[in-house]
Image (cartoon, rainbow, N blue to C red; front, side):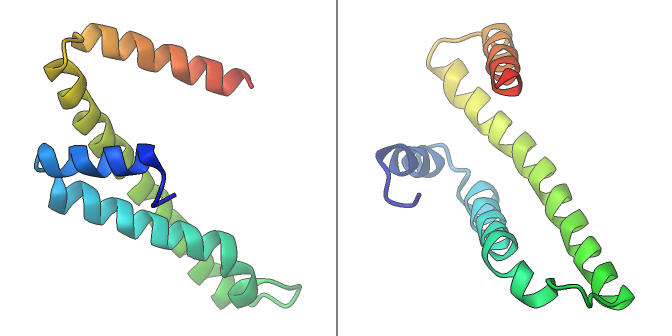
Length: 108
């Protein structure tokens, strides 16, 4: 992920458009938590003997992750909207294309 040309381009745009602190740190935190969820959560909480306390801690952590993801989605959208409108697309075109991509993604 961190070494792909697309990722490097995205990070370069983050720096160029001065979204460094909010977006870059948000992405870093998001992917750190995502990596824990995918690669470590089973080792910490997995198995059949999950206590009520552990289940509550896991549920709270997942809820925080979902809230962060939602906020990050909005931040990324605003960031990309700024870039795309500065490059000549209207907000209406961006919204239309976003809807189209989401529809195609959900259809698969």
